[in-house]
Each structure stands twice: as C-alpha cells, then as structure tokens.
Image (cartoon, rainbow, N blue to C red; front, side):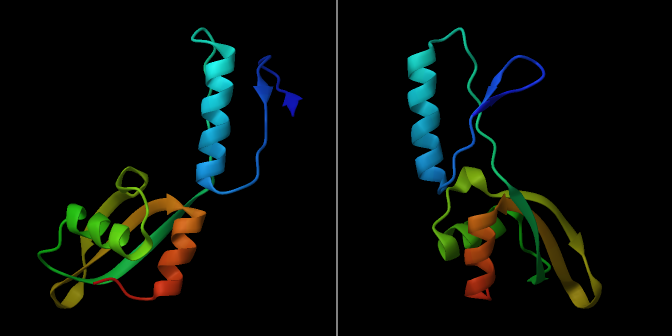
Length: 109
C-alpha cells in the first residue's frame, strides 16, 4: 500500500479476479460514495486464427467463454480481419488467467 503522486492510495492485491473484486467491493463500501475505487488487472492480447469467413465477434467471445468459463463481459474482441483462403483472424483482449486457460485448451469450437 502506498500513496501515489495524485494523492490517491494504491493497494496492490495478489490473487484471482474474484478475490480482487471482493476486496474492491469491501473498500468501496467502507470508503463511501464520495470516493472512487478502481481495480486494474493485467490484460493480454490473443490472436485467434483460422476462423471461417462467417464468424462474428459474438460467436468468438461465446466460444472463448465456453472454453474458459470466463465472464462474457471480460472478453473483448478488438478486431476480426480477413485472411487468405476465406478465413479470418480475431484479436481479443482478455485477462492473463483467461489467456492461459485459452492457450492450454489449444482449440476453440
């Protein structure tokens, strides 16, 4: 815990997103409504390749959700672009733990 240049208080918490969110909610409840409480987490960009030409961003985020059990709101599809041979590639932004689960699963269906 330390004070930042702007005068705010920075509390670093290690753990999964559920633990961080629980601590954030408790601090927000204790501090009151006049204080803003934000939580930051490391995000990772992942490229998903060889999508068929009709895949949409909703389908990609749904497949990632099914493969990793991640919250649908935590999956952000940044872009889907055409590639050669009638395929597409999607660039997604997810948290590091979701990216690790996604890479461990290997394939999306």
